[in-house]
Image 1 (tube, rainbow, N blue to C red):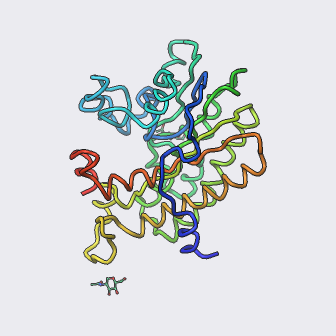
Image 2: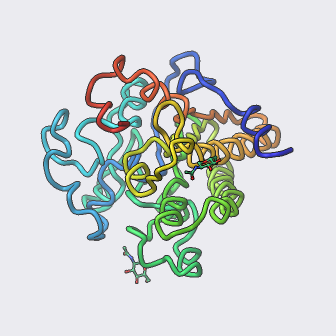
Length: 293
Ligand SMILES: *[C@@H]1O[C@H](CO)[C@@H](O)[C@H](O)[C@H]1NC(C)=O
Ligand SMILES: *[C@@H]1O[C@H](CO)[C@@H](O)[C@H](O)[C@H]1NC(C)=O
């Protein structure tokens, strides 16, 4: 099966939690990931890579103080927790500091985290640009199981985007970085299997975003040739790359569903959801225009 047909088969747009139609009751919610979902771990991790998130305007529009979220407002995971009537997930490193109990869940995500271990990037000679060593494996190590896992929701990701960011921003070509996709997806699958084997029965696994529409990529990889941009002004090659990742991820999840028939594994279509901002920015408020123009 070639790359294009994969894209066509897996192209999908719909609601974010595509398989989740009814509001269910969970006792707790756990999250693993990166800057898309970190609620304060990175700020407490001792990394000095991205100090601005400790200052306003981060946190300005909702918490009125910087919390360590990479946003002036709330994150997708905050809305997910609120939807299920659960408190915003506290960052694991804050709980570890205070020795608190976490009955309603914990957030293990760390800004800059990768699906693969830092050693992998050191072998590629790009280890020095990593913002954090708290990869998916480290985050899983922080997680210790309780007996309420069957009534918990697990969010695994978005993770993997940074593996590609570090590679692209170190000069990797799309063909080179494509070779990373199967091993990144494999690392995510291993994390999911570890959680299932500890007792998780409901997991949400988000895909990646249309990064070819992001301000950072549009700035760093700008090219004079208009044919490299789609009608929304996004870089086609990078969007295709991230759709390729999402396609592989969905394929791998389907295999897991067949293996663990009693476990509910939901793919969250962050790509399709974000494309709605790109194609209809006026419906989602002016501020988003700044990100995608
Ligand atoms: C990650 O680990 C390496 C090797 O131990 C170390 O040199 C580096 O400073 C660490 N990076 C961060 C961000 O803590
Ligand atoms: C722009 O890209 C198209 C398609 O890849 C190619 O045919 C064309 O020669 C390129 N134009 C320039 C000015 O590089």
